[in-house]
Image: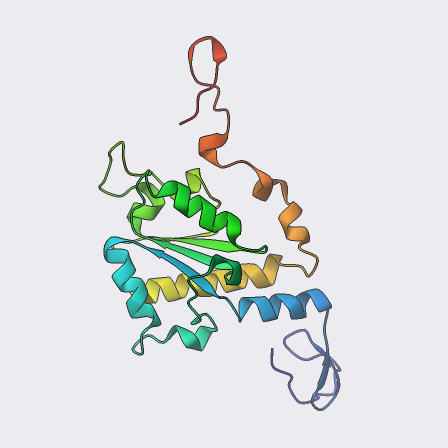
Length: 199
């Protein structure tokens, strides 16, 4: 959020009302969202080849620190962004859900790679066919595995979403779409006699 020199109109191009050189006025929600989007603390949940690409993204060549998201923490209570990279099997699912539940609000999730998003080539009973069936996903990063540039673009897209939708009092969490149960827990109305069954 840069404050430009006074152009005489009183309003800077970025939408910040400028009072004098070096002083700007903005909405508190916009300031809090700006702070949140530029201080993401990722919680990596990495398996298989996507985990290697996730590690490469945090390394010096791609330098995720430029985007304010380099502080990888392995304690869910300190993180606000979960990056699920790679396939998730049914035995890992309770661990993934517990980590997600331990993360404080507001929190976001990036599904990295075809396996995390759809199960990929592993169309078997033991592999979760998309983590969005069990936890809410904000951004999908396609590929097998996606390159570090794709993950960086996903983080940039998430930052834009946070700036656009976030509020200081977390009113965005009251959105009915965000409060829906995951697909696997919803009654899908299938079965004999209209009985639903869990997938």
